[in-house]
Image 1 (tube, rainbow, N blue to C red):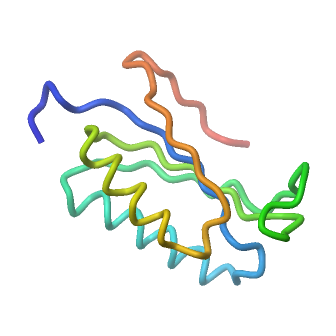
Image 2 (image 1 turned 120 degrees about the vertical axis):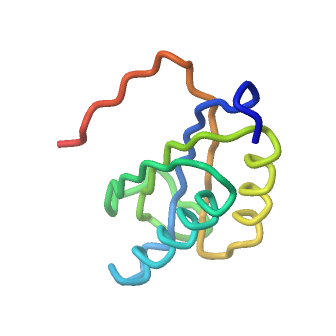
Length: 107
């Protein structure tokens, strides 16, 4: 990736709530490795299992995972294609963050 093409992105994805802690960590590791193998730097926060406001694919709760990473449009497209094929991810959203974004540690 060329330096001037790199931007900061955030993806939040909801994992199947029936996953064990080990399965959640394995899925996080898979996507973190996917990004780092393509030259990205990644920050991950497991937000834990939360109740959903409405059912998604028949589930009332989900494991929330937040990843902030450096990338370009091509990397975002590749990641979204892989996620779209993953049945364990109930929903996801990717946003481009402003260059001056400030991150706070979760409590």
